[in-house]
Length: 387
Image (cartoon, rainbow, N blue to C red; front, side):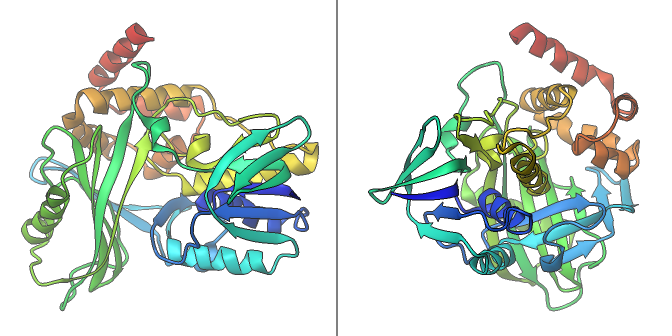
């Protein structure tokens, strides 16, 4: 058995981010083993975040924007606005660039090893943890587990919600200019809602190239043909595009649940990433939260010799997430008008602070007062009866 200071069970965004943060800290000589089933060299994810100030991975950002557009479902009676984000910016990091950069950085670190294989078992013990993989056993002072198990997100209780953010995105290229490369569309609700919250998300790379995603918040997936038909319909009927080439495609699903995720999985084991509840339940955003969590874990290891002293947001944010998920689960058709009211009645900086769980109670109350109260009061009463 070989012993390491740290073993990372999973080499995706969470595992590689934690290893990178360690490599850039006073703990850079920590011995680390990163275990994953594959060597990630393809562009399987696109991570976007609103940020202010310098952040890790700025040097590999594929695109950064200073504005965002919101478009409501009915422009004749609805709402459309381009928001200036300052002091924030909207940054996009491609999976391909992230995997390449972190692997190159970590391969240059003095004590980082990579192992390809499937983790069969993690065993907690008083003074170490064991990881069983490829019929071998490795031990470590600390194990960080980011393995994603869909079984953990099935509806096991009526106390919580188990929606899915699922999407199909096409990176398209057009023969003539069709996009404003300076203005992504965060929400474009000009697509049929059909009882669920559905919108189009557009990231323009140039006047002739953009990633266009059809996104839903709902309890179940669609047949593949329905995603494709919705994208073709939006491109043709809304943007007037019929002549384009699909350069690349991305498709994924993100769990949206307020079901508590245990951070501590043993005396020597900690859950991180999706497994550790780092996905924001009401938005599906996770990448920036993973960076904050990685920095907090490193700080805890340095100060206390263990990783568990990480901050938790005020409990009211979990309630806010639960209420919104209850609204969307019961009345998905209300998603478009509620999000329109949110963006119409608030500066986007306040929305970002709220979604980052960083605003004070006063800012929270201002934002909540800008929304129609009826759906949220009804949702809160239903939650109270169930819990």
